[in-house]
Image (cartoon, rainbow, N blue to C red; front, top):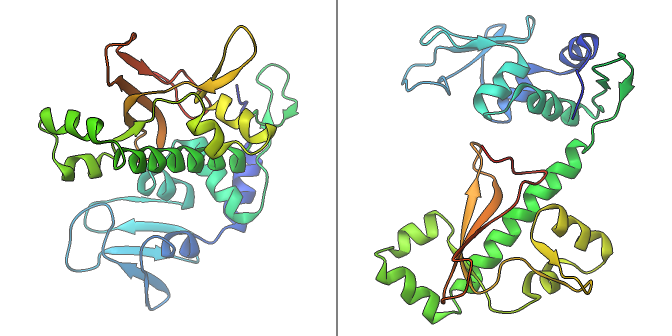
Length: 244
């Protein structure tokens, strides 16, 4: 479990970050005197009432009252938890987030660094796209979805896919070396039998991506196409996926 982030680091991070750059990379700002303006990203409006002060490193919306610093903007706009917002801002600034041990106040590194976790999210999205591609090759899987009233638009929107009936489809596609294989284990995409053989966890299943509140693919739910058991199979808890 990660420890606490020192207050001094947060203060230094905010000092080294420019809120104008942070917001402008997401919402197009326009210079207005000493400040910047835009239509508020947190409520619908036609006349800009969202103001960003570079001097104060602060934003405020005269329409809805949204306000804060660079961290609070990332939390609200990118839908991040506080620690995630700090990590996002630190990564942009080229800084590593220190964590204090809860028991003795000593500094320790996070269990999974920001870039590693980001790479895992990207890999999960690649796997979701791969499953979606596989669906286009499997007529029985397409027929199954059509019989249950799922339109092409729904299938595309929710990126529903198909895991082929093979032991190593994902393994061969995404694990070219031991390090990549280990990443797939960490994401719950591979299993190992009593003989030590590695194989795909999901096989011959309609695949439903499970997404977090930011829309990132964090896990999968699979429904078997035939009569095999179990009928439904979900990803275990992983670095990217926490049930409940």
